[in-house]
Length: 83
Image 1: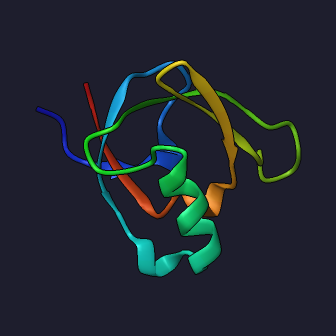
Image 2: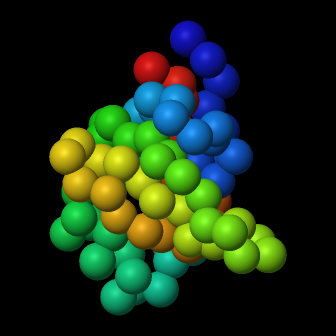
C-alpha cells in the first residue's frame, strides 16, 4: 500500500482512492457542490488531464463515468492513495 498524498500531485491517468477530504479548507458552497458530484472518502478517482494555464488549473477528474473540473486548491484538500 502506498503512502497517502494530496490529489493535486497525482499523475494523470493513475487510479487512486480518496482517503480524506479536508472539508473545512473549502468554501461551504464549493464543498457542497463537490459532495453532490460524488467527491467523498472511498471514491475512486483519477486525473484525466491538467489545464494549460500558468498554475495548470483546472484539473479534469474522472469520477466513475463523469469528468469534472476542479481547482488545484480543491484537489490539495483531498488526500488519496494509489489503487
